[in-house]
Length: 358
Image (tube, rainbow, N blue to C red; front, side, top):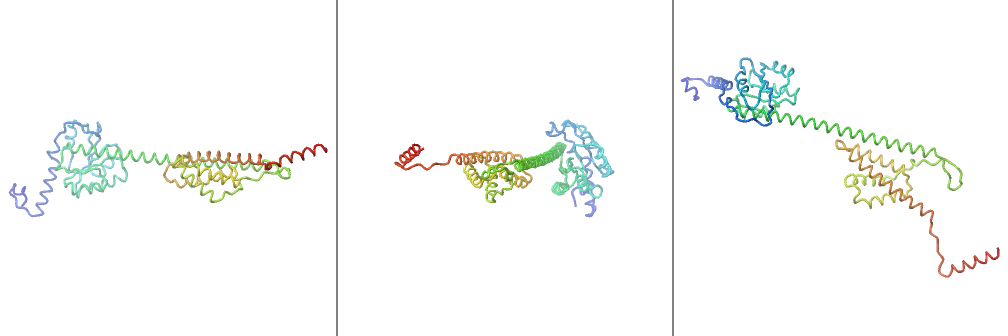
């Protein structure tokens, strides 16, 4: 026999005992003296004015909660009460609340189903479940349904309930802020990728314009001296091994910069100059490699890659221009075979004889 049955002098069956305990817990839920304990200081993270909606079944009014919250000095509460699930959903649709307190009454108002339905429509509203079951029993179910906290009315105080409200509101605020930051980051990355694609398109159009100018401009045949159209430099095909080498160089350059890549840059430029690769073909190779890298970035930022790649192209073109200038200077100032000692005098005498005969 339970203690409270002995106190009233009753002889109850198991079913009657369970019903008595349930009714006694329900009475404690709506007249708990622990909930009447008032805090002495403000609760951090709790707004100065809290808009609270209490969803309760018919026949279990929340006047006691209204009295408790209206007498609070830690924060000001605008207390609204909704009878039933449909009325609660309608109030949330028409009004904006900081937190929703749902009374869990099995068989009458299923707070877990209510929270699940609420989370499908609103992810930013803080929800706390209030019931008579133990925390160990109902708290995991409340979290699984999407609630921010569970409060057992038979073992809580006003102070702890306010702290639950504050943590629930702060948690939902942080989730909302995180969602906004994630969305802003996604939009920024999408904008950077669009900018990268636009820049690549502009570079391709620049190469096409250079190609057209090169094809339309007449040139002089170095052997016959006849004027003819210049060959299209874009018809040159950069060898695949040089493209792979440039791709590796770009990947390293994006991460490290140009600090330790002078040797690799010189080797690549020498090979390009040895094959007489034109600047337009080098530019086309750069665009193809860069476009592959940008597409493979996924959700990562493209602005850094584009900036480093542009610096790499500038450095490559400068080194390539120097290499071609050195080759031109070598062609204009070819080395002359010098005479062996003594033969230069013979050459001078023969030249004097030829001048005298003339």
